Length: 190
Image 1 (cartoon, rainbow, N blue to C red):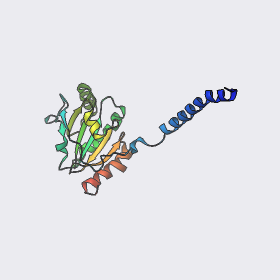
Image 2: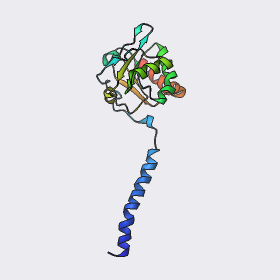
Image 3: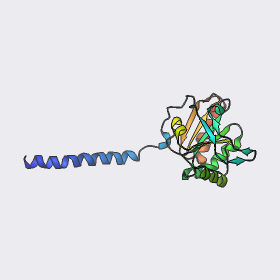
Image 4: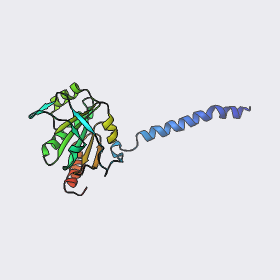
């Protein structure tokens, strides 16, 4: 084998590796993860039944879990949260704003969490949810297409997913995206 061919055989894999590494590096930073489309938009929410968060009580006694049937007949917001999720703590005051609205139900889907940690989280930050269901194994989250926490879904009165927000809600997102989407669904124009 000639010297030139030997050099090509040595440096070609290195060149391919560097090109691939560069491509991956630049693509990882590209795009907004909150803009990942959901195949469930416009479709009925999946069937599920979530048990209540063990030991969670509210003003009227034990806080119930919830199921797919609870999403029928009203506009609903389903917020996927976990105690171990730092952005969930940051968005929690905005979920409380939603919980005080009264024109729609707000459900908490506690994702891959331990009951005692979730109770402590809601005890510390407040419980804005009408019901809290536990998805300790993550199966329901998979059915909903959850990429990670937090995520928030708006469900229309027919039980169809009208909107999905990936990532934490802040004041700008609440004012410019979430509330207008909820208003549209409440007005029947989703």
